[in-house]
Image 1 (cartoon, rainbow, N blue to C red):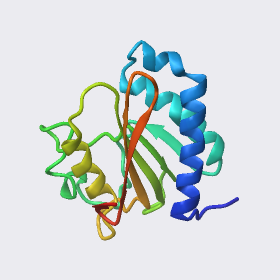
Image 2 (image 1 turned 120 degrees about the vertical axis):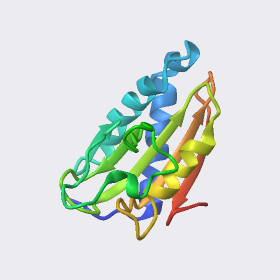
Image 3 (image 1 turned 90 degrees about the vertical axis):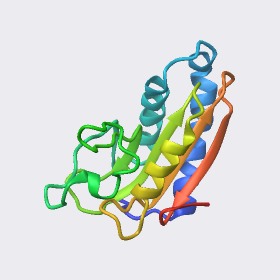
Length: 157
């Protein structure tokens, strides 16, 4: 089992999954399905190419050893009352501290990307509580074309 993928290998596998999504699930884009539907389908394909990792949607749990989840994400929380965030899609190892490979935020219709950019910056911060190896923002249009923006080390590439 491969547990350590390079950023190039992660990108290669993600782009392969995005092409499968665009080809197999084109209709979902045409009928303007919600981003959760798109995230679910993409998650299925990611699980196939990262079989030794856990792929979860809107995962809202963290390692019990870590402090409050809002510590790194106070500016970009999805739930203002708790400061919690809910990434659209993650590839990680459940229960293992800092075994976080990929975090993805998806937009299908709305274009409020600043909130998602802040979240991805926090989640990929090298000294943060999550330390995802890489993050990805995807904006899809009604034809399944996507605009990718990658994040590493707490910064947009």
